[in-house]
Image (cartoon, rainbow, N blue to C red; front, side, top):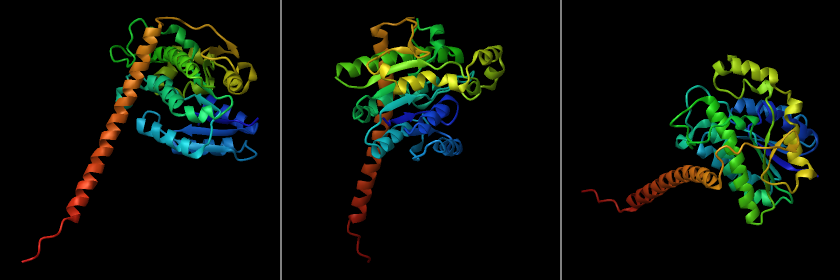
Length: 314
């Protein structure tokens, strides 16, 4: 059965390779990127694998709340249902903390906050599918997280490794939360996370710091990395396999449910994570609403002034 599948961060690496495979099998594929030239090139490449031209491309910078909600609005307008959302966008950031909107750290933004927003906002489209699925990209590196002292914004201490490892751990936490919340609300959507493996072609693309690529860590990781065909296996499996139809809130590696680190985990801390996300998103929405209200009032007042009778000339 043909599915409609959204893959964020799909202009290169795993995302694009998975999009090509799904398109070649007749699925309707929605790719996403923030660089217009890369997105156009990726669209042409992925669409060449689709016999029915069932590929769509959407530009959005997921560092921007405006762009995230604009993407959601466009998807709601253009599609009656979405079967699978694969939250693939991510980054191994540079040596200096990079704030996205609302001062949310960039790695956290892409790995945790964006998947949460898309999961909530696209819920109605996913529920129109008989078997809606959300797939969040985590990493084996979550086992090396340090979550004893919660600092979701990495404002007290930041290193790219800490931000990456912790964010991938929080991806698992938010996956559990979403799976449980949706299930408790009688939703047919399942939410799972997975480790795609280290991908050789992505090690350069997923980092904004050239020093990381040239470091001993980067060189070792490159030697241990998978090729793209191996890297997309578990994501492909989770998107289409009947075997996972009723599995919910789990973490997968190599097409199997795998063990996760329970470092620092508790339902209380999970809720603290959710609260941090909600506060970050609400602040943005309140800010945008205030700006909109300001312009509405400005236009109303301007109209009143223009409608006033002009004083007669003497």
